[in-house]
Length: 125
Image 1 (cartoon, one colour):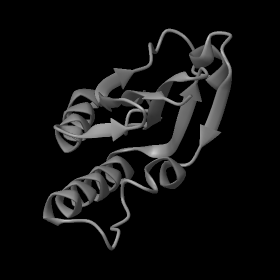
Image 2 (cartoon, rainbow, N blue to C red):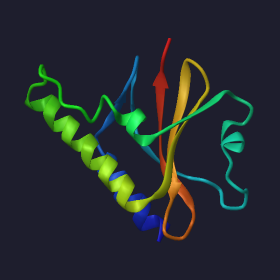
Image 3 (tube, rainbow, N blue to C red):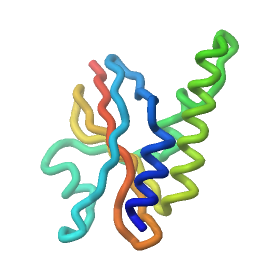
């Protein structure tokens, strides 16, 4: 079941780039089920911040007055991605790991209870 969930999420993210000081793609991510999931284990000693899905995608899912057709299409694709994430996963959280070069994990539980989602990178100086 996790493969189908990850395939659906990956397909929804296809072609999207997370915008920060650099643009980064979204890649599928699966937590190793042999180790119990915890934000601390994910962070591996680095600073970690937990935010909501809405906080993370707020700007990407909001149409602005100055947006042209291309920007509106991108906003629509981000909105679709959020809907797919909500449909496929429960207990969704976004974990920002690190400082300046940040690994962002958008994770939730699939129907089998596995921790899966997407990973991307942000650069914030």
